[in-house]
Amino acid sequence: MDKISIVLASDEFEKLQAAAMMASVAAVSGMEVNVFVTMAAMACFVKERVDRKEFQKVGEVGRKVLEKKAPLYADLLSQGKMMGGMKVYACSLALDLIEKPLSEMVPVFDDVVGVATFLGIAEGGQVMFI
Amino acid sequence: MGDEKKVDEVVDARGLYCPGPLMELIKTIQLKPVGTILSVLSTDEGSVKDIPAWLQKVGQEHVGTQKKEGYWDVTVRKVK
View (cartoon, each protein chain N blue to C red):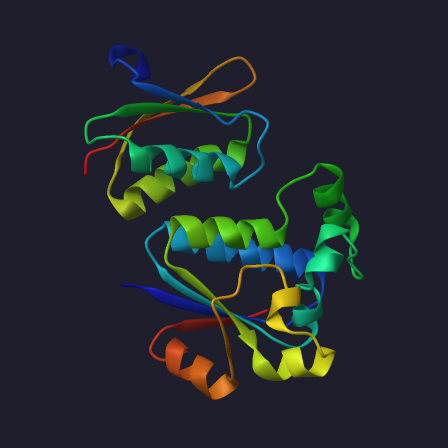
């Protein structure tokens, strides 16, 4: 089975959207998908902020996504997980840095892992860094 | 092409953005028995190309696509 692993490190709204879309469509197309949320991206998964649509870096296209009420990245990931083979991992360092427990994040995460674990999971497949 | 076959299930995904229509198709196709013919209605042109690409990848059948008034009808047969 094809395997794709996505390292999601950006806090740019459009990049989060694009990554979540790639991940969910790959998952429903029979690929094994692993998403590792780390660094700046981690803050974009704080549940309170997502619920309030508090996005710091939104460009022209991102504003259209919000205006047209297209599904947000967190929803796209949930959908991909429900309908396909996708796992989403939170970077333990990034969680420590923002001083939040996993319970305050949007409920898309399967586990909290470090880089070494994720590299092991990603081994042998394609990796996308966003 | 789609007209010759009896459609068992209509997935009305008009108004949804990409990849909405594909996701709606997948939600429905999973629940239906082999042999079901589904018709996906989409106003999103990207999905009209994307759905056949997905069908090919997962080994389901694209029966045909028809342009209607302001939307497309993508007909699909669940073969496995």
